[in-house]
Image 1 (cartoon, rainbow, N blue to C red):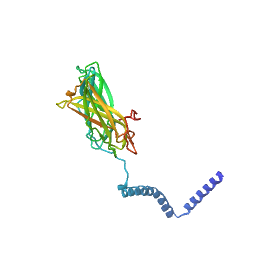
Image 2 (image 1 turned 60 degrees about the vertical axis):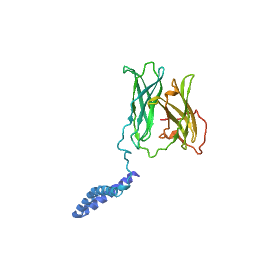
Image 3 (image 1 turned 90 degrees about the vertical axis):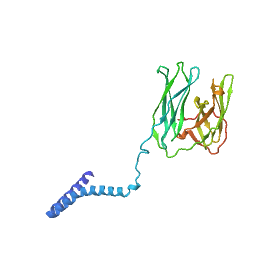
Image 4 (image 1 turned 135 degrees about the horizontal axis):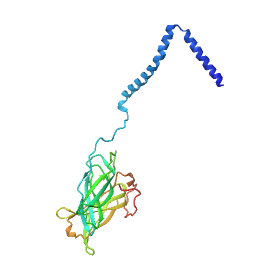
Length: 287
């Protein structure tokens, strides 16, 4: 079978060659020129048509491009140390995202604590997110150290900016808390609620408490987290600061936030409902 096919191919080749040789010399030359010219003509037609249609549809092309060209660094304030008891400290700093349309979904920070001689006492790491144009505190509460901590510094890392097409707007209302003093043991108490006014059940809500004295200086700061806060829920809290008199505190500010950059932290609820506190922890990190 294959041998017969090969013989037929050879026969066709011989017929073509014989026919070519029988042509007048001028016609043979023209045929050769035409065959050779077909090669550059093919490439000219191919790339010429590509360039023409590429120009014709240039305004309709979908081209991958960076979402943004430049970004502003995070503005990081000076780290402050507050002694909140024997061998117990709170450290905080204020940060600001100076970008109006860029967000940080999962950055990292590291606090380094120093003694009076400038020696490192200990370090502590954590994660954070930043919404566009957001300003907030980074707080490390209940730092235990037998050495006296006199200063601290904070460094951010893994700062990878993202430009989100849309970020859900979450409103968590924080009415002014009721404050009072407990005597035995002595402690200042803030008691109040946060109200989830979004249509989502929030996996984690972080609450920051800032205490000011009469001169406007921060004399106490702490954080706590509430989990699985349902839509329209009023979640109650009681926050205490041991060893602090009520007369020392002139004002208390309460801030509540949730990570709206993490889709797993937001669960859309069909019917808003008011529920009690839940101790369930979310499956994913707050950050």
